[in-house]
Every structure is written in structure tokens, then in C-alpha cells.
Image 1 (cartoon, rainbow, N blue to C red):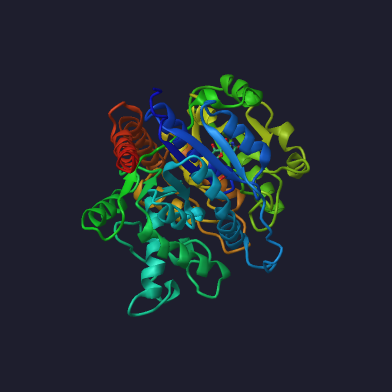
Image 2 (cartoon, rainbow, N blue to C red):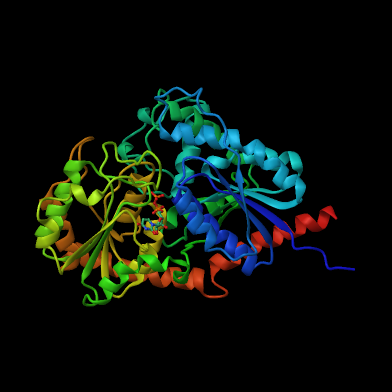
Length: 473
Ligand code: UDP
């Protein structure tokens, strides 16, 4: 008779390249290192289809993919905000996951931050349900604390707490660093965050794309809580960074340009797959880069007020039209501005790249650290301010910009000063550079060596999933 087929794992990504990219990497490892059959499931909305297709096509052919059918959202109030729309979209899509799991019985269902309604489906089907966290460990602490505060004896909210707030093992968080909507029960997203956190106890485990050297205190706090049963086990499996060969060769103009620059001379500037600056901020950043006198590679996106592209990853119009008059000519030779997208992992790994002005998306931060590149933290929205606090205050690998008032603008002088501090390093710049090298070494030892701790953590989880299948048969 034929050998039994490999156990099947279903991974569901919520919309957005920042969610899909690390989940796809998890899929690749589950297939190649742990012998699973994997289906990566995406949701047909709020994502840029071309970016999703590019990420998915970089996966080995043995990884199956499926797209959940569109769901209606037209009943939602217009002003509930992007986060609430994401939560609602994924919640409404989860019932369509059932046939994929039932049709090919699963050893485990893995969802991500917005996808936790899938945990109930996993429980109902008697399948292990895990949450993949493409962001920091500290972020789980914040969600937990929203629930503890709200449901606890003292029934309160973040806005009533001391500022800054110190969560177990985390960076001191200024209230302004905590993601929008987590602080105030009047915000439409607050109820979703609360529900989200209440579901965590029902997870069989968490897989987090982080590692202890990035956030030692938070890692230790969850290790203790896992041991004493206060919280499901948290497995630190990161950092996941896409293999460089997976990137699109069409984007090699950046790489050819980098090849012509001296080693360690270029500042890379990018705000992730969804970040956008205002028109005024785009001009001020340009002036700051020019003023710094350093070489730069800048991924310029269409400006927009509010800092978030409406359709994530989509580009419309020509962002170059918003650069200051004569900027491209004046910086010709030492600066390259590219529209919308760059092969970031390769750019960061390039020997010419020395620093990263970043929106502090967690994937970007891990990619930077994995290449030993220090950062200038320029968070825009979502959990990025919190990431910036971790990167500047705990990991020590990024220099902060002074906070600007909402709707305010980071001045050209401040941009130039931060770039100079990191590139002609002063004391702070030197410390960040040293930490970048240390974290790069730690990441390599954990994630890339065959018996590194992150690989062993995933192996442990894989073993549990395989046993669960075994017990069933
Ligand atoms: N990315 C890229 N080129 C770009 C912008 C982004 O390759 O021009 C990739 C980047 O390498 C990272 C992901 O898109 O893997 C962005 O994820 P992150 O968590 O940093 O930010 P988000 O896009 O979720 O805000």
C-alpha cells in the first residue's frame, strides 16, 4: 500500500504584504524542513493582488494556495477605521475556511493576528489551532493587558494608567506608542481588540516572528507564563527573512546602482508596503536627505494624508512628481529615488547599504537586523510606534526621531542630523551600529544554523502537530 500522505497544515494570512510575506516563509519551512503538506490561504480583498501573487509564486510548487471568496462589507459604517475593517473582513471570511480544512483533514490550523476567529473552527474540528504573530512578542503583552484591564476587578482602560506604562518585560510604553484604538473604549477598533485578546486563551500555541535578543524581558515573561500555565506556549521561531533568490529580478536597477556605490555608504529609506507620507513631509524628507550629504536609496510612494495607502500596496499616479523641483538632478550620482517598491531584503544585505530610515514595520526591522544594518525609527501607524520603542529602547538598534504632533512634520534639519549621527557616527550612532552587528550574530545563530533555537522551537511544534494526527488515526 501507499505510504500515508504528509500531514496537512492550513495557514491563513490576513490581507497585506507584511502579513503574507512571513507566513509564506513559515509555509516554506514547514514543507522543506518538517515534511508537511501546506495550504496558504489568502483573502480576496484589501490586498494588492500583484504583490500577493509575487509572494506566493516564490514558494515551492508543493505549497498549495487558496483564495477565500469575497465577503460583503457594505453594511459597515464608513468611519470605523482601517483596523476595524480588517477585523471584520477576516471574521466574515473564516467560515469559508471550513471546506478547505474538512476536505483535506488538517493537522493544524494557523491564523494570524486578525484571523483568530479561526481558533473556534479549529476547536470545533478537534484540530490544533495556533496563532502566527508576524510582529513583536511585546505586542501580545499589549493585547493581553487591554483584556486584563477591561475584564479585571478594577475594570479600566489604558487611558487611566500611568504614562509611560511598564508591562512585564517590555519597553516603557508612552501611551502615544500604543496602537491607535487600544487605549480608548470609544474607538471602534477597541471592541475588536478586546475580543481578539479574549480568544488568546483558546489557542494551543503562538508562533512569533521574533527572538529573545530583540526583546529579552518579554520573551522571559512569556516563557514563565507558558510554564505555569497562565498563557498558551509562545514559540519564538524568528527571524524569518525571505531567501534573497526569491526576489524579482526586474527590480535589479536598485541593485545595479548599489553595486556602483562604495561599501557602507548608502542610507536606504522606505516605509513598508502600506506607508505613505504627506506631500509636505515628502518634500521635507527629500530636503533632509539632500542636506545630509550622504548617499541614499529612497523608495518614494504616492503622498497621502493620514499615512496609509487606501489599497495596501497599490500604486497610482507617479510619486516622483511630488519631489522638490530639481531634487533628482541635484542629487544625481549620490542618490537614487525609485517609485513604490524595491527588493528590500537584497538592498539591506548589499554591502553598500549602511543604514535604514524605516517605518519600523516588524518585517523591515527583522530584515535590517538580519543584515546588521542600524535604523532611524520613523513610525507612522498601526503598531509601528511600539516597534520603534522596542528598537530604540530595548534592542538599541535604532535612533529615534523626536515625536511630532499629529499632523506635524519631521523637519529637514532633524532628518539630516539623524542620518549624520548614524553615518558619521557619533556616540549614539556608534552604539546602534554595534548593536546591529550583535543582533545580526544572534539572529544568525538562532535562525540560520541547523540546530539554532528558532529551528528547534518550530521542530517542537511540528512534532506536536504530527502526534495529534497520529492519535487520531
Ligand atoms: N517590502 C519590499 N519592498 C518595498 C517595501 C516593502 O520588499 O519597497 C517588503 C519588506 O521587505 C517587508 C514587507 O514588504 O518584508 C513589509 O513588511 P513590514 O512588516 O516591514 O511593513 P508593513 O508593510 O506591514 O507596514
